[in-house]
Length: 188
Image (cartoon, rainbow, N blue to C red; front, side, top):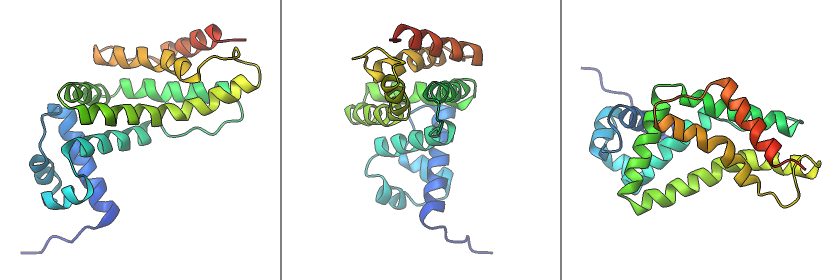
């Protein structure tokens, strides 16, 4: 019998997060750390060394997916950057896993105040990607003075999230329309 090679550091973390995402997409947030350990081939004490709670594990897995699906955008044109970010969010609503994971995370948040706090931190971190570009747009005179860039971004992505929850993915055309409507409404 050949021994299983020892995985360490980032390789273990990637395996655990991938297993967590797979279980979230398949079964929702009712997963246990024992199930993640079995699915990833990692002992549960290894998981608990990295994530003190199941909620932290779920939040980390969702963040890793978001970082892959909607990476930061570097663009000299802030409006183009906002559109590219919106298109990336819309693309996640057209995957099998994206809407299921969103539903699972929201359902789990209903039963866990810790997950509510982690979800809030998650959205604040993700919104920061767009807020930077919206602030640049405001500085160039493209947005009204005093408009909250977080609210503008929420007007773009929150409808996509609600549609995903209801099983209705957001097309590229709809994502562009949401950007257009939000930016036109906040225009100087």
